[in-house]
Image (tube, rainbow over all chains, first blue to last red; front, side, top):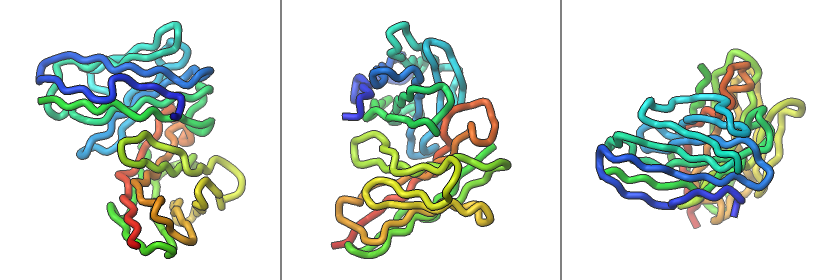
Length: 115
Length: 117
């Protein structure tokens, strides 16, 4: 157990729907990162939050959004889902805002299947 | 923009043989470099990282990697493969190392390591 908790582990939904993925960071970590892993695109950085504030954006679609709550858990919202959004979505956390050189801890991911 | 190229989507070695997984990167400034391992149905686990200092970096499970600036490479090696090393391996570069604004990692496509008994 890495200490980063992602729920649900699996999610199957239809095209056009909206889903919310949840991530609880490791105790004491203030930064949360979201990544998408797909067969086509590999692992891509989506977005980062630090202590409730958006810190950096990567290749995140406009249909996707995220937030980090006062208790530091984060949610990734995916809307108007398309078949191509089927992927494994990872959350990672770190104690620092400075970036991965300080150490990332990854969760085990949420596997999203859009049918 | 930074990029990472992992040569060989699949690498097969015999148990006890040398493991060599290749990674080349492009960066306009000295990067931070990482190797992660992913076992089936699990998240990514950090094997080792290079930030500054010694260019030969030792990680967990007997793996090591050497940063070669002249070759823009960060190849991963292990002297003797074990069956438990079978997994997906990802090389990654830090955007922050380039001085860019994003703190995310840019990953290679991954190399699937197969260990033959």
